[in-house]
Image (cartoon, rainbow, N blue to C red; front, side, top):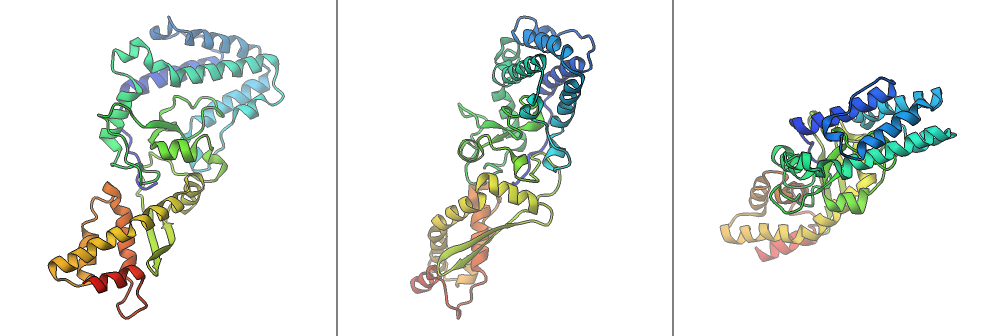
Length: 332
């Protein structure tokens, strides 16, 4: 990731998630409980009641597996760090009894309802508790212009008619208890979400970025430019090299950044050429001025432009100059 999301308060969403998880805990521990008032008129209550009845008839070892699944799957940060492994529906259903299969079927219905329908209920929409409102808070508190996963696509603002999708780090189709978990939900641009990640499971690729970490992000983009063409794109870090490899495998980041930079290279170099003509400065001064202008880093893809221009700093005039620089010197 090019930047991490900051955690921010969302008391309403946090409260709903806590109430839902409390129901799961009470059912798994086979304790009595009372449904929240907002659940009374909706079918979700029936799904929970069915889950409770089939869970009680399941085998002891199946109950233990489901408890382990809840305890594991809700620890997203530890899963990202490969400290623990989540437990999938597939694992749970292996050699399952009839009642346990029914139990899992109801968990799937609950998970789907929580994400697709819950916040659309009048009870919540009247209080402005929708995913659109949640996205507005996300944008205001923590989004920095572009998608943090690619750095290329601008994120829809909180004022747009539509919002970006919330991606599930652990796919809700493959893992129980994760569809309505705040730590498992984060905005991501449509290109990354729909075209590249889709329903891929990051856990299959290795250690992953935890999007809400408070750790300093030292991911550094660099290029090698030979004969006017970007030949190599690298992303390096002292702390996140394993995460970078997973990130690249999931989203083809290096290739996408390389193509974007290569497409824009001549235009960025033309800006330097224009400064040399207009202000009568040499290439080095014009280049350094362009580099300094690449702030803030995330806005308008300036972090990519900055890395490209820094790659041009190592070129000496008496070396075999790249094609684009030869053009600059001829035009100046």
